[in-house]
Length: 160
Image (cartoon, rainbow, N blue to C red; front, side, top):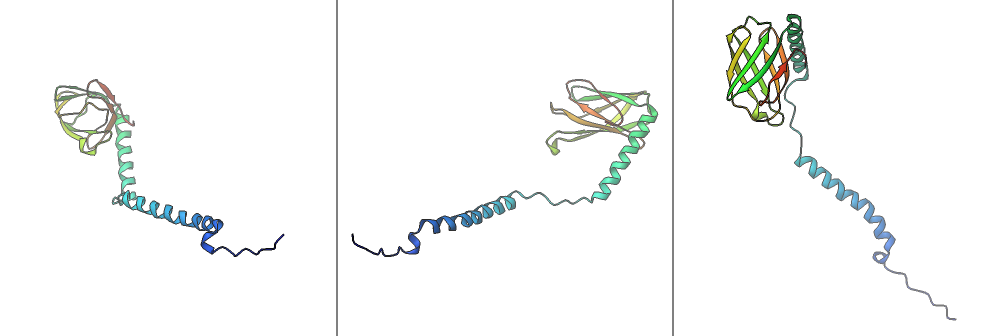
């Protein structure tokens, strides 16, 4: 038997070296991709102050409690572009505001001024989409809310 010495391989021919370099290298690539995705899909900056939003929510709760004390309830319906709101007991306001919040398009939100045509009966005109709206009916003193699909009648009550 001959005792031959093998010449050492160059460093770049060692497979374990490339394996050890690939692990942190892949993390660098994945981190760069994550940063790119985060920059491309950044959330918008919050512009409203949270405290003022909290005050508004408290004010809405006070209006709902006032409607509850009045025993106020209603029903909303639509025929064509005419939206009808029947409230019981009849409130004293000559006009009230109806806000329809679209479920996924802020541009689809509608605010309709409702005018009294009979005691407790208010009518307004507004085009609506065939979706399920979140409804808020309010005046300066009280507020009612509910969920409504324009093809059917739906209740509006305090504190929904």
